[in-house]
Image (cartoon, rainbow, N blue to C red; front, side, top):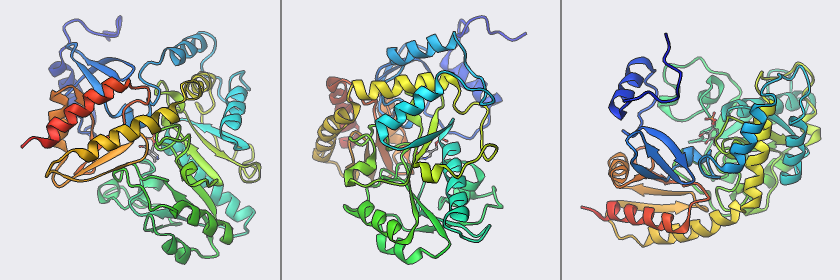
Length: 408
Ligand SMILES: Cc1ncc(COP(=O)(O)O)c(C=O)c1O
């Protein structure tokens, strides 16, 4: 019999739970030794009741803070009405989300999915079909340019154009039709475009690569090159979007307008996987009934949650908070004198501290001091707290970082 009368099991210890996970779960992650049992705002609590300041925000899925009461209320109300209809029928939440997305972002239309990777796949299908039907690229010949050191998810087609050896090794054969150019190099993009190039896919700030901010003016040049060659510009804002960099979208820092924008993560405030592709009527119009779909994509529970999550971003002006708190954090981190630090960089409350050595031991030391963050690549500590974090809490977390970074 399965023991599921209550959410927790009496007597569960972190060690016991970790052992279960080790024994019965695939080993595709290497988490820190901490077992979270609940969370609220910027704070998380482990099974033994110790509290930790969250400096990761689930890779920006909880920009609104953990268990935000307004999103929780929407989720609970909707869960008692109807959760999933499939898109065989209309539901009374999806149209409202689509309208909200249009009003908030200015894009004509949206196509909702679940995970970020699914939304990326959706965008890729869309631009391929646009390439064949509108740009008249011969069938099966469309090419999408991507960036070196990209991260767009873990499906086979996406890892197929990753430059990260571990993401690819053992998972081929891969889909053709993708080619990488260096990130931050507009001339290289221009040189790589051919008549068969249908789109260029880029993260406005590369997240998983280590919070890499491209040179000033790069995105403006990229937009101009894409327009000149009739190439669609796709910005993957799954991690950088929805307030993280101090603007609603990171592409706004350069006042550009991509043809396609992909969002996920904070679109649901971390309650539920909700992602979406945003675009114009002319581009999204290539999809016909039967071309694409998802059982859960656009479901009323996800739509209600996403509407509430978007409202929190607006009501609490999270982009402005990110800009202000990020400026403070960046300044403090840059003042730290430590032989360990190679570079501190970021946009808004999204900062990478690149070290000369491995970041993991420092993340472990931070955990022992009550701050949770995770290394990205070998040697970068990523700082991405919920954007609702109280300034005093942020200051305390930075004190801990300072202590760890300036330690021997
Ligand atoms: C820029 C970017 N794109 C796509 C993804 C994939 O999203 P998901 O993990 O929800 O599939 C991520 C996840 O970290 C991301 O950072």
